[in-house]
Image 1 (cartoon, one colour):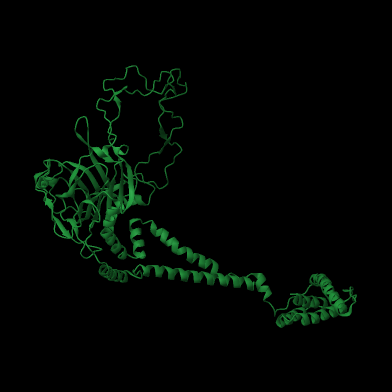
Image 2 (cartoon, helix red, strand yellow; image 1 turned 45 degrees about the vertical axis):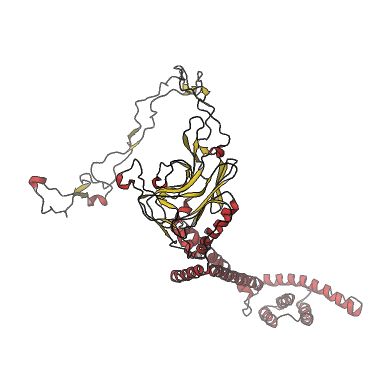
Length: 618
C-alpha cells in the first residue's frame, strides 16, 4: 500500500509539472506573437505598441516592375493617367445616374505601411467610374495574360463590387464617357450582395457567324469566399489566362478555381451541334404514365367511405371541478373608460376582455365538450392500387436536328478582343473600398515579385498586429456560440482528471487492520487451530533452510522433523527460529516484533509462536 500511494503521488506530481510546462509554452507562444492576453486593457496597449514598432520597422519602397508589363500602378503619387467618367448610367433614375462617386488616394486605415497608398472608393450609394489606358495593348496570341491587384473592404461590405474591367480596343473608346455599356473583354474580381459572395471571371466572346458578343461566366469556385469580404484585410486577387485556353483564379497566391474556356464556362463557348426541333410536337396518344390504376380492382364490400376520420371519445369524463357556468374571458375590472371617449361618436364603451382568473385554478371553464379521437373504422376514399402501365412509352422529347447556329471555336483565347484600357465601374452601398498595385503582365514571376514588394509588406504588418489567442477565441465564439461549450469542456477536462487521480482514496478495512499494532485481539479455539496449521507450514520452510545451513557448517544434516507434539516444543522452536531470523535479517522492524508479541501475549503459547513467526517471515 505504501508503494501504491507513492505511485499516485508521483502521478499527481507529473500532472502538475505537465500543466505548468504547458502553461509556460502557451504564454511563451503568445509573447512570441507580441500580444498580451492577461486582460483586454493590456492587450489593447500592447497591440498599439506593436503596431507602432512594426510600422517603424518596415521600410516601404514603391514597387517597380522587373519585367515586361502592359500596365502597373502602385498609387503612391498623383492619379496620373486616370480619367474620371462624366457619363450617366442608362435606364437609371436621374438622381443616381451620374458617375459622381468620389475617389481618393490614401493610406490604409488599419495595418498601415507608411508611404504605401492606394485608390479608395469614398462614396456610398453612388455610381463610380474611373479608367486608365494601358502602357501598350495586350493582344491574345502566344503569351498568357496575368492580371493582379489588391482589395481591402476596410469597412466590411454590404452590397457592392470590387471587380475590374479590361476594356476592349475600339476606335471609339473614350475614357471620359466610360460607363456600364462600354465594351470590355474580361471582367474579374470580387462582388457581394446579401449573402451571395462571388468572384467574377467573365469573358465577352464573339460569335464568328453572327459577329455578336455573348458573356460567358466561369463556374463558381467550390470554396467559401465569405472570410475574404469580412476580415478587413488586404487580399491579393490574381487571374491567369493561358494560350491553351485554361485559366486559374487565385486569392492570396492560392488557387481557388481553375478550368478551361471550352468546358467550364456558362453558357458554353461553343454551342451544341444539335438542338431540339421546335416544330416537333408530342402525339396525342403518347402515354408517359409509368403506372396506372388497376382496372380490375374492386372496392371491398366492407369499405365505408362515409366514416369520419374523427369521432367523439365516449369514454371521456368531464374533469372534476370544471366550471360550466364561468366564461373563459371577463371584462377587465381595472379598466376605466377614457376621458375623451365620446359615446355618440365611439359607441358604448366596453371594458377589454381578460382571462377569467377563476379558470386559472380550474381544469376548465364554459361548456364541456367531449374530445375527439381517431376513428378506428375510418378508411377514407377507396382508390384502386397502381400497376405498371402496359402502354408506357417513356418521357417524350422532341427529335434532334442540326443546330443552324453551330460553330466551333477550338481556341477561344486567340479569338478574344485585344485590351487597351483598365477600368473600375462600380456601385456600392459601402464606402472605403481600397484598391492597390494593379499589374498586367505575361510572366508569373514578374507578378509574384510585384506582390512581394506591395502586398507582402501589408501581410507582414497585419500579421504583427494580429490580436492574441484569447481575443481570437472570444471573437470566434461570438460568431459561433456553440464554441463556448467546447471551451468549457476543454477547461473542465484537466480539472476533472486532476481531481480523479489526485484526490485521497478512502481507507479500507484491510489498511485499518494492518495499522492496529497496539490493540489486543481476542483468541478463539478456531484461531489457535488455524495458527497451528500455519505454524506447521512455516516450520517446514524453516527446517529446509536450517538443513542447508547445517550442511554448509557441520557437513551433516540435523534431523528436526518432529514438531507440534506439545506446546513447549512449539515455543522452543519458535524462539530459536526468531533468534536465527534476527541474526540473518537485520531489516526486521523492532516495533513490529514488539506489537506481535503483545498481540500474541493475550492468547496461549501456540498462537504466540504463530505471531512471532509471521512477523519474522514478513
